[in-house]
Structures are given as structure tokens and as C-alpha cells.
Figure 1 (spheres, rainbow, N blue to C red):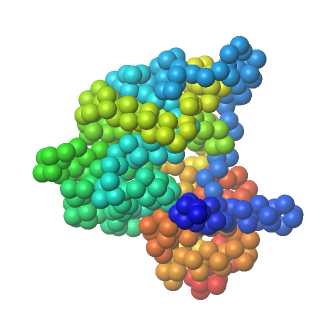
Figure 2: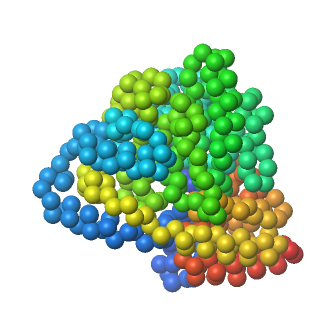
Figure 3: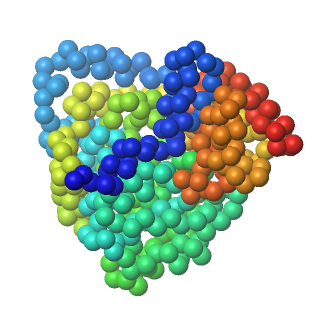
Length: 391
């Protein structure tokens, strides 16, 4: 009687959410817990955001409908911000404001999917909801394995797994869950493979550049503009991480004039969003964008936490990567069993997420967007884990 796939999604939350809800239950009972599960930004929201929202609430017509693609002024500001960051020449005519990057991704994937033989590839490790979005659109989810401990791309696997049925490749840069920043050289190599495949199969293969963390980079890392390195790039963006607004959904889809099928893609994105009931992005947050001030959240706490945790974990004998962006960290389970490690940690009040569902078997993911006190307290609990593993 009901859609079994959707019923299953509703009944069984992701492991991230299950652990997060467990942590909330403990906290409500006054039981101490170090929760490193959810990417919930802890850096304060810039004051101008609150000021703009309060001003907007008292403005006339701020709660009214806008055009489906968003107000012209908000789209122009979003375009200017994109061009200022990436040194590009996008036009506001290629921007659609959405309810965050997830809505953008769903709209794009739905537009690109024509039949159940279509494939959407993703670089591993990946945000688990990609699989949900892709399969819900009726396409086949194709993970591209990583090659090394720094989560670099396995180019041989990419070469073999991009097929005639491939419609797009999703690249999340900086990456959730690893914090890896794919370099210009890496993107150029990916672009070379995809261009060869486009020519071979005589149809476009798009890169979907998922960029909600693009402002959060560390140690002088440079985030390449994928759209400059590969013509058929579709950008999905959210303001939720850069402004610490995860609970308020505002973002956009962006394509440049150089993208093939520009007009059809744009119309398809609008149609895809319309088909699932999106009328327009929240008008109050469009107003916020219209009154944007060039001040983002202070990301220094994320870099500090990253340094505290990586140094502390390595000193304890754990193996972990060195993130260059976002606010996540991957730790290798000493015995290769990430679910066991997560459960052991749970028993001592430390919540960490098995990364198997991220395509990284044997690792756990830590969200480092917590308070410095939580980051330091978690190391005390990792000391107990280290003893359990005889490190």
C-alpha cells in the first residue's frame, strides 16, 4: 500500500542521526557525553545575519512569494559572491536559489536521470545521503574507490567505472567525511578522463561540484574552481556551513554560460524542484542574501580542534588523516572493525560514526565542529580506547 523504499528510509535513520539522537537522549538526562557525530557548526553565526533577519521580519512583503528561481537581487548577490570566491564570470541567469545544497543536489540528479540504466558516480569517501538522492531519482549509485590513506582518487577505478551510462560524477570539495581538499592537479586529471569519455560516448558527462564547505580550508590549502577546469560543471552550494545556519536551508544551483544544454538544464532544474513541491527558496533568507555582508563565521575553532585531535590521536597510537578543509576527521579502527570501535566508544560516552556507509570501511568519522572543551574531553576518552586496543 505504501512506498516501501520511502518507508524504509523513514524507519531507519542514518547511523549519524541514530547516534546523534542517542546523544541527545543522554544529554537530556544529564548524562555527560562527547558527541562527535553531526556536522552541526559551532562557530557563532555572524551578527550581520541576525540583524538582517530581524530587519527583514519587519519589512513589507518579505514573506511573499518570489520567482521560482529566486529574486533577481538575491541571485545577483549570490553570483557576485561566487565570482569573487572563484574568480569566475557566472551570470545570475545561471543561478537558482534552493532550500540548501541537499535540495540543489536532488534537483540536479533528478534532472539528469532519464531511466534506471543511468548512473551517477561519486568519489569515495562520500556523504551517505548521495546514495539516497541518486536511488530516489531512479539512477544507479556508482562509488569510485579511493586509492591511499590520504583518500586520493583511484584513477584506474575512475577510468573503468565511467561508462556509457554515466550521467554525472559528484565531487564534494572539501570532502565530507575526510576533510580532503582535491587539488587542481587532481581535478585536471579527473577532467581529462571525463573529457575522453564524453568524446568516446558522444554525450555530456557532468561534474556536480558539491561545495557547502568551500570557505573552510586550512594550512594554506587552495580550493580549485572545478568549473574553470571542466566545462560541464554544475555547482551546488549552501550557506549553512559558511554562516553557521544548518537549520535554515538556503543555497543555490549554478551553471555557467559555457555548460552544454544550458537552457534545458536550467528549465530541468526548475521542473525537478517543482515536481517535489518547492515553490521558491525561503523569502526571508533571500532577503538576508540581498543584504549580504562579506563576513563569514570564524572558522579558526575548527582548525584548532583539528590540530588538537590529530596530534592527540597520533600520540595515542591511532592512525588518522590530516584534513585540509571542512570539519571532519577520519580515524582508522585499529582492528579494522569500525562498528566495533564506534560501539566501544559509545559505552564510555564518546559518540563517533562508523564510516562504512561513507564508503570507507574500517574508519570512523569525527565531526570536529565542536567546542574546544569537547574536543579536549574526547581525547581523554580516546585514551581509554587506546588502552582497550593495547596501543
